[in-house]
Length: 258
Image (cartoon, rainbow, N blue to C red; front, side):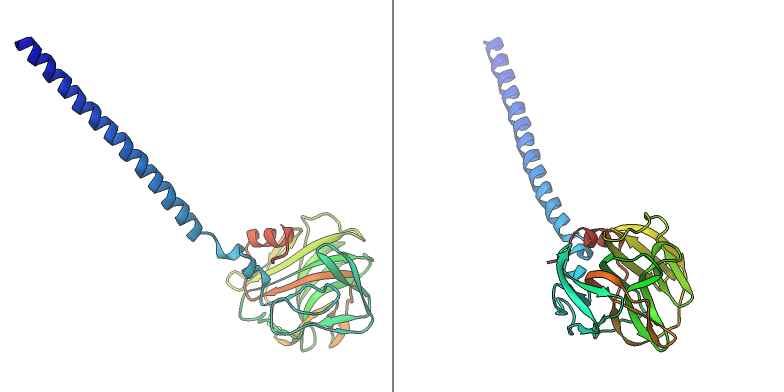
C-alpha cells in the first residue's frame, strides 16, 4: 500500500510539473506575438517622414510635362522666349530649350537665412561653356546656380564666389538624362551636389547675395543680365526650404513623388 501511494504521489507531482511547463510555453508564445505586433507598430510610427511622397514634393514642383503647371507651390511657371515641349522625358514630357528661352517659376526661397535644396532632371545637347538649369535671381547675380560647367567639364552647384563641382561623377555626356540635386546647410555652411542620387561633391562656403527675384529655369543671371542659358531639356524641377538628406535625394532620383 505504501508503495502504491508513493507511485501515485510521484505521478501527481510529474503531472503538475508538466502542466506548469506547458503554461509557461504558451505564455511565452503569446508574449512573443504581442512583442512582434508592438515592434511592427513602433516601426510604422518611427518611419521617417522625410522620405514620404508629400515631403519630397517640396515648396515648389514644376514637372514641365508640356506646361508650366505646378504640382506643389502656389504659382505656375511662366514660359518666356523660344521654348518647345517634348514627350521624350524620363518621367513623361520635358521643356526643350535652345539657348534662348527660360521659365520664371514665380516663387522664391530664402537662400541667406535658411537651409535649402533644388533638384531637376536634365539633358544637355551641348557641353561647351556654362549652362544653368535652375537658378534664382539676385540684384546683379543669381543667388545659386544648378548648372553644367564647361570649364570643369562637370555638373556643379554654385553661388557667388563658390562653385562645388561634381568631381566624383563621370564626365557628363550630351543626349543623356541626369538627375541633379544641390543642397545647402546654414549650420555648417556646407554645399553639396548629387548626381543621379549619389553625392558627387561638397565644400564649405557662404554667400550674402539676397534673392530679389524668382526661381528661374533655363538660365542664370550675371552682371544684371540673363546668362548661361540651358541647351537641352529640363523636367521635374523641385525647390525645398530645407536641406534634403542623402536618403531623400536617392529616393527622389529614383522616382518622382505621386
